[in-house]
Length: 188
Image 1 (cartoon, rainbow, N blue to C red):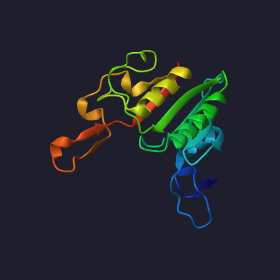
Image 2 (tube, helix red, strand yellow; image 1 turned 135 degrees about the vertical axis):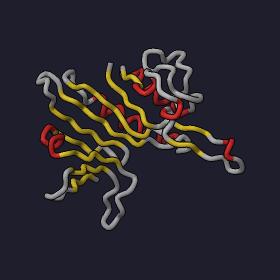
Image 3 (cartoon, helix red, strand yellow; image 1 turned 60 degrees about the vertical axis):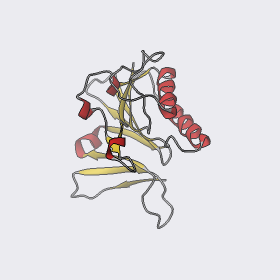
Image 4 (cartoon, rainbow, N blue to C red; image 1 turned 90 degrees about the horizontal axis):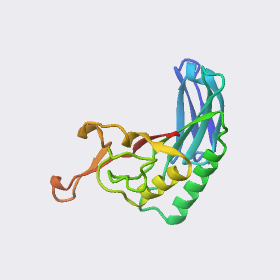
């Protein structure tokens, strides 16, 4: 399930977690691509599943380490069991953080958190777009339970920078639905 791809001439090394059956394509996985400098700070990495990988780095502040959790969440249409399994694995990754760790959780959470942060003021701002979907609620609840903040929703952005992709309408371009999936979380 895990592998490290490297080339002595490459400027980076890839740490991958995903399906690793013999002759299987490297799909349904997550990875870190680390420069030589970043790799020098790497203390440990752990492939948790095809959707979650973690890496711990030393920092210039000797008292603290940086724990980065890279994720790829199931879509809103996925089976509830798949979503539950993902968030249980994610909880396990966060639970492993020590008091010395600064936690950054990032990736594609396939969630819309919207701009209404009522009940979630401690974990998100009002700078997102649209309205919260089911995955957005799961994500906001997870952040609330783990003292994490959805950083991309806190600070103002130009409208053009608030969304990462647009789903075109089937019949008319005016049915475009903007989506924002890139989010950064930091322990508070």
